[in-house]
Image (cartoon, rainbow, N blue to C red; front, top):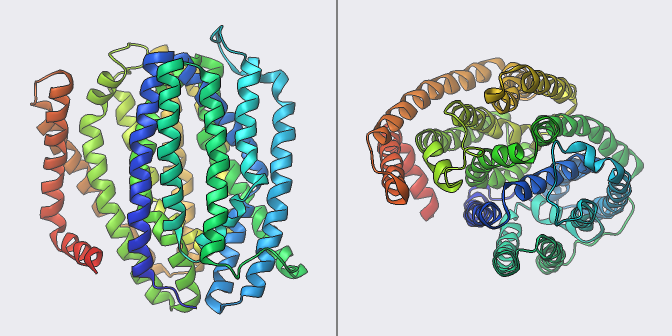
Length: 507
């Protein structure tokens, strides 16, 4: 069964765009209430628990990614019997994963206090809070999260996005009321757990409604189980590197700088992840389509659609980078109400925007690489990159002057991407799927965009610099100036692409 890449991408981008817009707005309001009603230490505590459980989720080993990519071929061949066998295997694995996460999480209880530099808010029980977070993390594995792969394999991520949008909207309205009227962190966490259950139930119902013939039964042949496990070994190494690069940052900051520094880092990083989520709508629309095309189209046709998607996403990245570069610090000053512990010096937003650009520029390549199941070829890359990131983070956070220690943690992953991950990833894709000529075309494309991004970001910053009005009205004017300046330049440079994109959306 050949999927309609354009139709599915359009539908998925729209749904994912709505979901990511909600993820941008409501978590921002959530963090704001935390800062203003509970204080930065609670926000830092929340970030610390999220990072600890992010490490525990390594127990998933990458089975979700491996199984999803294994399902692309059964979908292309319309082999429902094999699909059902994969689903049953996946369900069994996920229940084991949930058990492991919960047990290992319990084993970490005695060491919680050692991960925090300085004091903890006196009106909370650190261990009870952690247990609630642990239940919320492990619950999905015991419920129906595994059924999300049915929708993903058929490139119906729009359904997942709609479910997540609905539950997120209801969840954040509930927790806003809880925080505003009670200021009770325990009730906030309990509400979060409740909506995790609701989301899983909705995924189960929709997957059964749309694909009633897909049910977890049958036995996956031994050689296919062995293939999945072989791929999982490589994906697991990628996950370890990813955890070291991202989740460990909060643990390093908490251990060496304290919970307030975790909150400050989290605010800057939150802006990046929120904007990344908007671009992520495009990536989410690609994965199932790429996976299907790999099995139904030629390599030349695959490269053509790959470069088209690179171009679309890179234009979005350029615009977002320019706007963020101009608005980052003014936004943080207003958001943190000028708190000197949360508003860092100018270098911090510069390094944060650098991280955003470097990380986002590799995502289309990573999406295709994942769809093509090219994990084994660079399985040691994330380990080397993760060790480099961890070692450099600890070195910089202990050796730099106190004013710049947090910046060291921000700089480390960007250097790891530039020196290790990106060169290795591109080598794998163009060595094992595309060819050398196509690789040169890809790199020339990125070199041109780097130059353009620096130029557009500088011009946008200069335009905002001359807006001398302070406060929220001033920031609103700066935001309009930044978006309009970057937007006009981008439209002038890429007006033909913009028109093609609008025609595609209208189809």
